[in-house]
Length: 255
Image 1 (cartoon, rainbow, N blue to C red):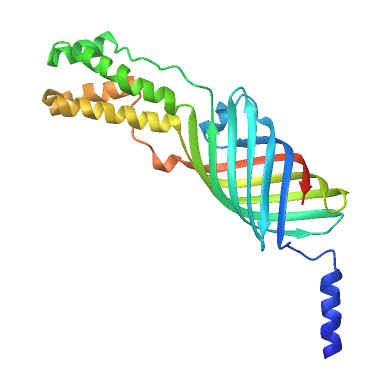
Image 2: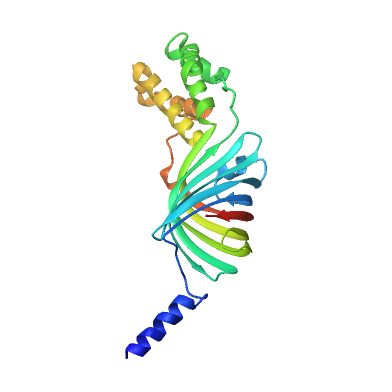
């Protein structure tokens, strides 16, 4: 019985096919990725391909790593990931990992889109109160338009689950690896445009609250038309989830 235990221990320690995890490890990598996903936010990138860096550490089997990718002129994608992985092999390694964590998008600064209310809508507003359409334009252009330009640059989200598969080839034993990877994530993302639409919705609601004549039932079609002109709408929470994926290759240094 004791001999069988020793034999099992020797097989475990010497088998390159079994999964293993280091007690402590640090790595950094340069990478090229093709990145895409569902939703409009990924369509804002000039190119799906982009280069960047990745780095992280593993402690007692728990991974914490991040990546930064350049997707075009002043277009960036950042992620932070926490989870665990299993690695098989030595000279040729296969890794499967599962993670969760935030994601951030950044785009070029947008110019403020000033509001000009169409004449037919303006005439109906001014019928309720002289100069009301100009008041709405001035108030919107002073605050909401500027906020829209600022918020439009950014988006943030969270990968609820992100699956990663790696295939790595050892170039310098235990230090340098050339690899390819693929990742698939299920996310929630709220864009700056979503936030801006909510800001505009609040701005219109404030206008209505300040003018009793617009709170009357017969004014409801006009108010809805004004919301459409401005692009004001509440954030649709049911449209925030989706999938993202990326594939690429990297050169990784481990310590």
